[in-house]
Amino acid sequence: PAVRPAVSGRWKQGGEALAKAKSSSSRASLQFPVGRIHRLLRKGKYAERVGAGAPVYLAAVLEYLTVQILELAGNTSRDNKKTRVIPHHLQLAICKDEELNKLLGGVTIAQGGGVLPNIQAVLLPKKIKSHHHKVQGKQFPSHESQ
Image (cartoon, rainbow, N blue to C red; front, side, top):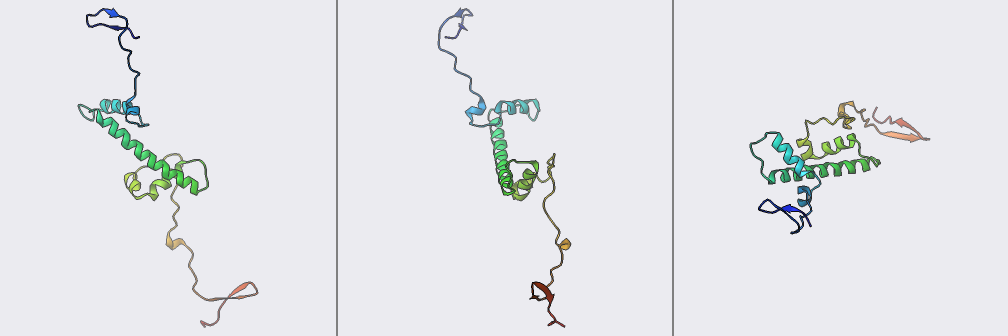
């Protein structure tokens, strides 16, 4: 049993045991730290007061966005036959998704974000529309157009 002071100020033995502490993240069944976000909201002076629900809501939104980005980046890395997600996979995943691209359009991904695979149409070689005849494995342009 826990030892705690009585109302009169004297110490007494017994009484109910104190409940085991449970984090606000586990109460909200979140992985992101609700307590830390609450502290940062208070220290950041974004408002005079911070309600109890604000850090829970913000942690849930941040966790949702993180899960979405990592899921898309994991799919991109699997498409590229890689087992590890690298910054380039994050960049590709964000740019392929319309809403994430709008949200994170101005964000620079450091450490090898790379460039998107894109070749301008003018730079591609011209396609020849003439008919070719195959003679013994070689291709010759037809003389019909002359």
